[in-house]
Image 1: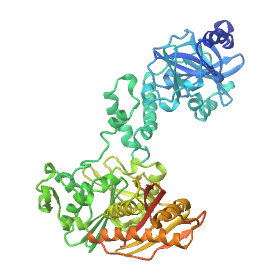
Image 2: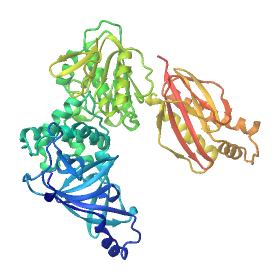
Image 3: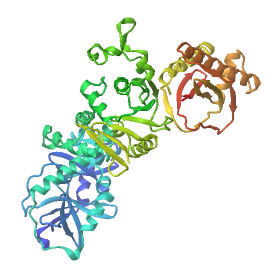
Image 4: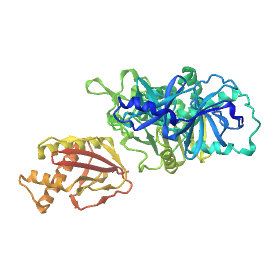
Length: 447
Length: 154
């Protein structure tokens, strides 16, 4: 590579004058950072991780790498991968002229050196370590776990990036595979394929969303709900402007999850939904039918189930074991008062009016249900079950707990039993479960 | 644990402790625990049978037990002697009995066993396959945990 095309500046020569100025104003400077701009926002990286700063033009394109890897660069004999942080964080990039000089920060993470292309490099700023504040989800267009903190200096707000998190093991594995000096192609920048780039940025977005959902709303993405999360991304994209695909607040996460919840959550089941569930349930001549209702919340689900089952299996003794680990919700369930708006002709025959005019279910229905304050990830001491209803429960457990609970289901469910999960949940494929579908509701049985 | 059983225990603990200790009694947040529970130093255990099977444990550390026993006897006790032990046992009896009475009024029939008192360091009480409800009570003599593990006779 011709050396007259590049200019290299040593960072260390720059920072001495800055610190002298600041010493008058700041009490203690024990942290220095290199600041730069990305899509109009100010970012910074700990200077201890920055090896040098360079301006470079042509990188050698390496095929078959992620879109944010622009290629490799010869840094005085060292071949290092060059990463475009703008593409990595999915910030819109204006298309690059092939020969334009890009600003580049050379950093070292876990003994691997990288170059990072940014919009422009500003200066070195010295600050006091105690003035670094932890990040608030609101600050980032980019995934919050990559932000080490936020710090203010001379009226400007810098977002401090945690390069170890960004470039640790994961990326160094990828780029180590793709760089082999003998295989370097000719020095030509290959044209980027727009279509390919769009697909990958969607994948990046989805994977960032999968990372932020647990933190913001305790929703864990796993084979149980993966399909829905990916499909939801398509409708989500239409409602958000270009730079705002990410979930940066609890509100965002709530909006994303809006379409997840099963029908009639928190209400008595509608006639249509009840008959749909009813057709899914198998014929059963047994004298006793055991039902496990997990995550029953305030109890609307359990009562709807009781009425449905009484009508479907009129000759059987039905026992519904209703659990929830939210004490406040379930503590009122045995005496649940049904609001007037929900008293339909379906449920009216089973309701009685008590003191003060409140409508509750009659004794016969209430005797069918055993409400328990219980955490289903603890030992489950229930008898073997004919029917398990666990709507929107698995998705709010960590993946290990999800698997443990599914194993519990397998143990407790009778051979001809059926499990109904949330509308947008499904048992992981090839895990011993058979799926039956009626209309748009699915039930699962054991193989 | 069945929802209807929770309130009687919480109310009984609050009522008896207020009556017997005077001072301010504050209830902490209830939670569920599934693993074996290390004992704080002194534990009074009352067995329950009838419509349910299980037990209630009143757990506290030694200095809290001494202060409570002293308060209940209206005299300063220096060592955790027979009198002190009998006092803590009696406290356990009072709370459990009131809870069972409340439950009786709700239609549930429980029997109690006489309490057993455990004292020692580094002890653990484990129940096989039973989840426990913990009701922490903060008193001016210290923290008392009411640990209820009962399940319906299936």
